[in-house]
Length: 189
Image 1 (tube, rainbow, N blue to C red):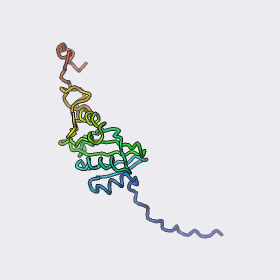
Image 2: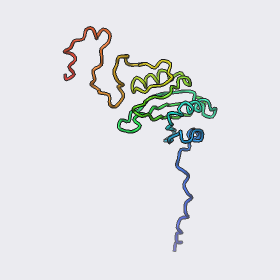
Image 3: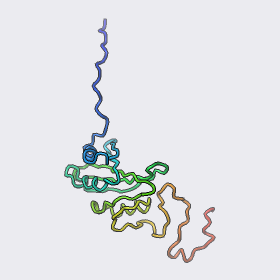
Image 4: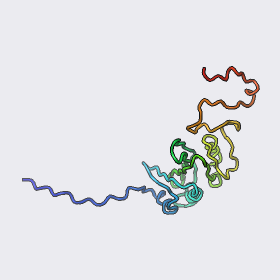
């Protein structure tokens, strides 16, 4: 006769399921509640930080020899229309020396979409911040030359915002403005 099976021993309590990334741990330890949340998925570490802490977080990520984020890969924004806060500005950082990456997100309210510029920390942010301003209308305070980079200065609005009217007519500039044919303005064709 087979031995009776004994009930399984009580399993040990599972380890906390929070992020295990040393990068995220360092940010949480250094900035506490200024790190609003953090998560990682398949090796991608993400920290959502308070706007007021952005420059200090970026300085730590760049200057700490254990982190050494020496390459700002991208700055962009996401428009979550209907959500509060509406926007997130997203920074993708990479360390050439350590071969690791992190994503920093900063939530912004619709009525106040502005952040301090990180151009002083990573000069490559110059054009990246201009692109984010041009497409989403996020202002970067302290930027050395914040103006449109893709669209002309008279362009009205920011075309990657979810509420931008896709069939909006824009003011014409240059030679087209002088030789405009009014019957071509009809968009119903």
